[in-house]
Length: 152
Length: 121
Image (cartoon, rainbow over all chains, first blue to last red; front, side, top):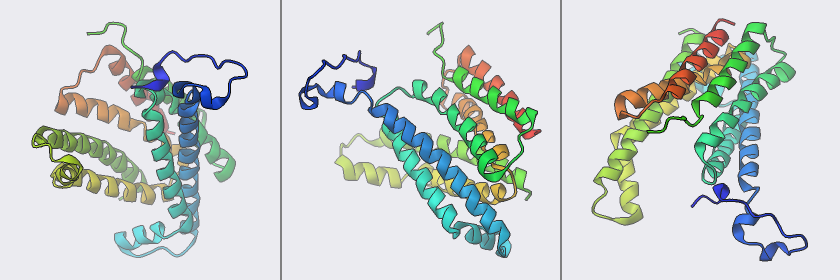
């Protein structure tokens, strides 16, 4: 049963939290899980990129396996991958409570935030074309999960 | 292999990974008629070659992503991930005969345009 999709009863004023039925107490849970997943995913990707930039500055490994090892043993890359993994766990927690077709369009925020952090932390230059591309992708994500009006 | 090709290959492998996982898990569910409990499910999952194929695609995709991203802007590479939705939609229609409605075809077109804009930026 999906608690989050049930009509959400308003919290009676002055009622102790423990006496409120479970679905009401869980009202904000998917929002928190989703927000945490977004923060972790964006931070994870940024940390990975920071680690890769650090790796690029150092001596590179030889051969394909050497290059992968060199990159994988960067502390920031390991931290980034771990944080990204936490983000995935939070995403699963959000999906367990709310329909995926509702949550998917919201993840398009990740594209905007990742591009934002690229500008702020890595001083990447965003051309008008790249910015437009991100906007179009966000539109596509929203459209991808919109319920069809003509249901079979 | 140049950095852009690595990122594209990573995106394609990620999409293939999803399809392999879906197929592998569907197979596990089909064969689970003896009702052998949790250990049976675990054995079923790890004895599925498509589940291993998912793992392989996933590892390769991650390695290629890291190598490619090392030489590219994050604001260039990351939006290309969204092309995965296009690939997964098309692959699910082809392999699993999932229905793709008009909205989804429109979304596939819009996402592709966005990805093309990024790719040329």
